[in-house]
Image (cartoon, rainbow, N blue to C red; front, side, top):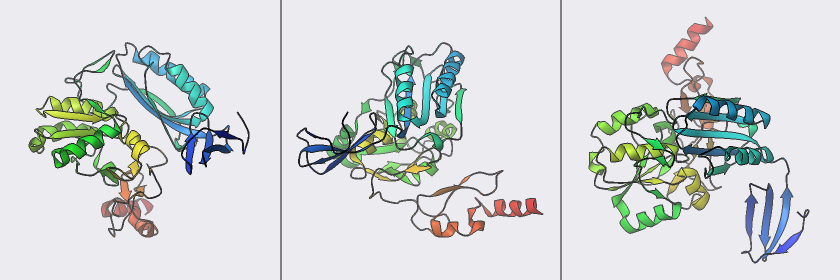
Length: 341
């Protein structure tokens, strides 16, 4: 493979740093030469993935995935259902490559797309593999159908460059529709985004049925979420409610961020459901979240200091120093004092 300082004339543009996640190699391209500046055989990463396909025996798939993940010393969360699989796992990069290779051998998963992200094994407390009625808890069992090819009747997938092209061509006639929850959107979202009043995925159907968004039915609507899985279902639900032109962002925010970083239509921090809590795509990410207490710019979430509550508190580093401000509400603070007494 070559050691430190080994160069190859490959004709790349100069001054570019490249990280090859699959080979755990970091390269510096300088004056059209490629120089390996770091080789880490034990680099850790996080994988995000999902696949909608008909699964006849979810419990068997669960047992197989759990055994596989434990054998590779991976941690994370995997949901299995009759609709397919949705997972996030972290660990050593060689173990993750083995996981990808083995998982793709399952019927229906051969063309599953895996997204690589910064992080690792310790971002997750354990390895959890569960069977659920649906991959996303929209409670949309009666209106979403899945076959071997995926979700039936969803909106067309747009690659990151196609999203930009659509906005360049139609301007304000293109509306982004956030398929995540409000607290995720509070710290990061696309420009010209509609953020539904949702705290959980179960809130989406009542929101769509409320009539609040009927003025969008004749617009070009681009649904998006973290990795794409929620958009697959949301685009179906919107089309069935009369939204005429609904698209979904292929690969979600993660793929868009990989393509454009913070130099495109995305603004802020990407909230993630593990120990990282959030991630930026560059060193010049805009901070759009506002501290619950002082209104200062922040992307920092903390769990409510009352264990029985555990709601998220958006709080800046300054206010975080005041332990009483780490409670979700004044009521949580009072309840904690009663517990001490």
